Length: 131
Image (cartoon, rainbow, N blue to C red; front, side, top):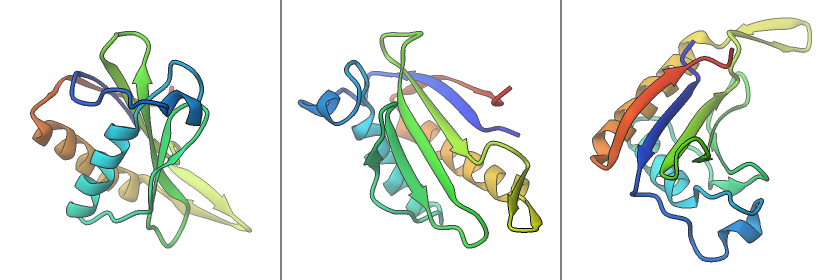
């Protein structure tokens, strides 16, 4: 499953005071705001992005299981970013049942890729799985 995408871009700079909302040296709020809007336009509405210690979380509406996209800067490059989809596993458990996440996660991956490629300021896009 495609769940992690890294890329490079100068289009999503750190905002003043952003590292006070998350850990020092971390940012991605501008990216999270762009992705929320772009994913909504692609039929994946969600809630307001919120800060986590590692970056920003964009919750997505999904009836069967919690679904969200995380994003933030990626230290391998000074202009690097990483986005990841959760859940990152093909099956999640809910009470006594198993729920296949594969199709829905792939819908998010396709929309995420489309949104990033449409931006124009994104380059060197590379997908990988959690493993």
